[in-house]
Image (cartoon, rainbow, N blue to C red; front, side):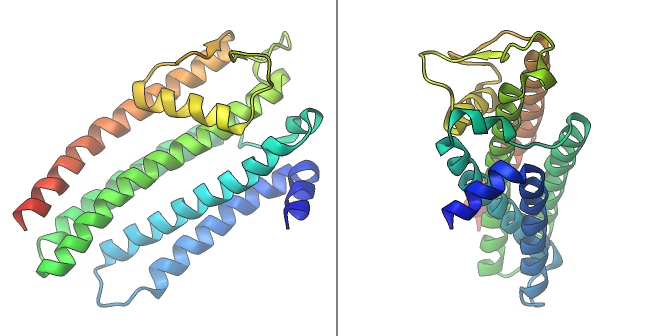
Length: 228
């Protein structure tokens, strides 16, 4: 199985990218459609969203784990969406997540005790799962720009300087993305190109807004759980 994944990652990176999104979409729609009709529409939509996001995380980690094991010369083929599509999809995804969480919270008070608790837990899970999905996708974007420097830095520089002599793998980029997403700043990795600074700025602003809104939602969820 890994040999097939390696072949696809090296020879058909764009197909891997498209397939990743289509599979996640199909999983999310299937979950929303197959859940019992007795559950509220908000619950089914949020559950479908969480299923799609978890599928995206699993596929990203699987593909990028294999990518990290590839020889250095093959890492340049890692695929990511174009800049505009990437930014639009992330903003839309964050907005959908917030909308789904608010919807679940609004209908939870109309449910029975057990169903209300399930709605609140799902709302909290939607926030956390979406946040981690955003970091995973940003890590793919950073890896794409690093190993395709002609797309990020006209001079051919990699754009990021990691400590040590080893070439960075996906886990290094995930570490960088999580640091930017949690603290809204870079850690021990130095950004040396304007293009990377723009992406890190976008990442920090998006994460700040997303985290601020969802922190309020999580507090509301916790208060409702305690009250129920």
